Length: 308
Image 1: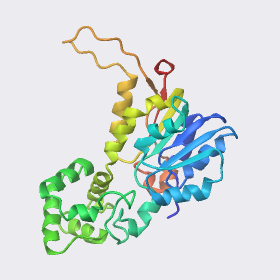
Image 2 (image 1 turned 90 degrees about the vertical axis):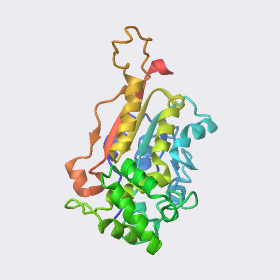
Image 3 (image 1 turned 90 degrees about the horizontal axis):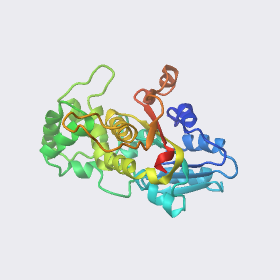
Image 4 (image 1 turned 30 degrees about the horizontal axis):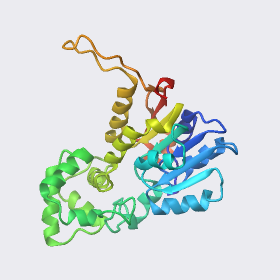
């Protein structure tokens, strides 16, 4: 399947890009959003693109390496503030886009091990040259920890049953391919119509292996000083664990805490963000064109002048 940027037009419109803006695409993927951002920039605009996947970085170099407006870095998006500081952009960035999760090329390449639709090595690493693969982790993880990961990151209510089956299966043969893992899961649980029973477990292991939620938390904690007053943040998430983190973090910066009768007086609250509208879902037409957009949600916030 060709790479189709999710929520492309809503996210680009939400950034309210001026032609001389300084922008960051924290999850380059295959450059659909980056290209749309560049289309809005004039000759004095600047764009930093980041990705932890070496293949994505190679694609960015081939696509935009000769564009003087573009800086390309092989890194995770939670390093964004450090990278911007190194460029001398602290407090100057006007817009940031994050498109979380995995890209279509990652899912479609069997060798990356993200999907059970095509059998391949059970890897799941965003950066194949860093960290431990899913197969290596599954070979040694305890049943208790495995169940907790599947429950917490996959929101899978049958986590204990699945973990027990995986541990039993690896005692017979190492689980080294996506088909092996999917078959073990399918042997003990059934999926809803149209949903493979391994979907949530694959999601959970991928999130854990890549420390995706920890990276999102670090980004949320560190991004504000990088932004200019009035800068826009746009985050596209694909499951509730990501979306809830973004929603709660931004609400805490935008709205005063709820009143507590035990504490009749409170410190003055100074908002640092303004929430821009409600979360946006992909249109029915977009979901028909790209089924992977069905779970996508876009949230947008703006840094307030008072937070400069």
